[in-house]
Length: 495
Image (tube, rainbow, N blue to C red; front, side, top):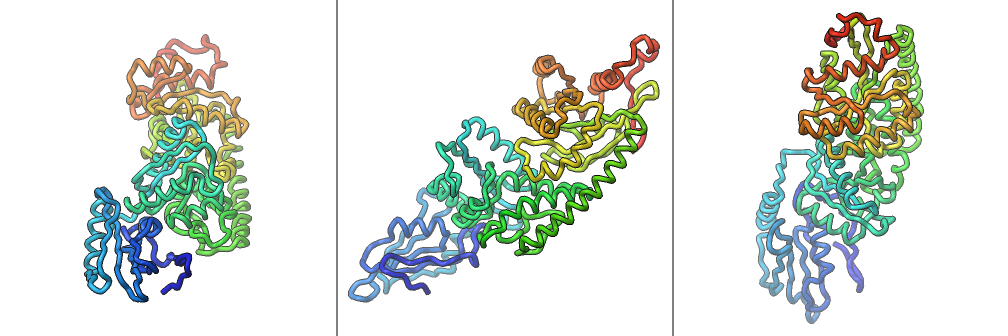
């Protein structure tokens, strides 16, 4: 029971009645109109945004109830968004429980929600001043990231802005449209393609009553799922805590607690309502552990250097096929999956060439544009191993329409790591998905090798190119005719 004033009624915090999994909130809102007037626009807006089961206004005449005006939302896809009933207050009858049960059942049928499927259902949002085509390309990648995090994408919203709204990124009116759309389709999560400030996350979450994350948090979530080695787990947890620390202010619904699910899971998932001091202590301990792990990596690296065996590192955009190539070259079984960031942990194998020569070939974590700074910092220790590589194999998915932008993104990250001048061999992968003429033209334009990692018979040119780059100082006359005719036979020597 809430008592308002002449200006209206203040609706209290409704966090105890969350929305998302069910079509309606589970609350009806009954209030008075001091004159005989029907439901107004504000009433219908509250009904739509707050997802009340019903909203009712009782009009007053001579100090007593007179008429009752009742509105309820219609299932998604109906001709009307809501229905209004009008009746004499004393004659109004409705089997409320049965009516709402049937209404929600009908809404759920139109929302196509399987209540047994507990995965997050997300609306992806991209709002920026950048050109529309850039927003669309970035949205395609955000969708791939969401699918990699096992999110059901139910809608995408792209809005090119003249200027950024400092509070909500996009306009408040557009945000309300997104909320109504989210409720109609059963969304539980909003994922923004742009990085959000802590205050923006809180403001959007308070307005929408949905969980809100940004691109960086989504990538952190994927890394948390996929890291298996101790190195990877420590680096991911460190990145998560550094990201969350400035966002643990206030008591907004977005980041006031380290919740589970998308954006909140991780190898070091902490207790609810953890305070800043404990997070800082945890960060300090993780940094010390990372130093110990880094020292162990340096010792392993030193042993490899002492053997004098050349090191070749496979780099490239996420999901370019790096692990598949490593498996094909060395007949090993590194985990592969057609998803972004399927593997995060580095793997090294030996590869033997003719004339008793061999190399160490290393798989690395995939790159991506706009990699979160906290992740970049955390993984620098791992990526420092690239400094000792004698050759970088830059693997590119030729079937991806954005492969040119992906090449540039990888080059930018190499520049950040101060290894852009390392010897590189550009390798186009997945040629089985593109016409032969296109492959030949692109490979010629970039002076690159073209392969399909799932077709071992296509790897011959790559092996010859590696052999030439690594041992190019060897004079041609030193090779016997038998060596020149010998095929580049290769197999796994030592795991």
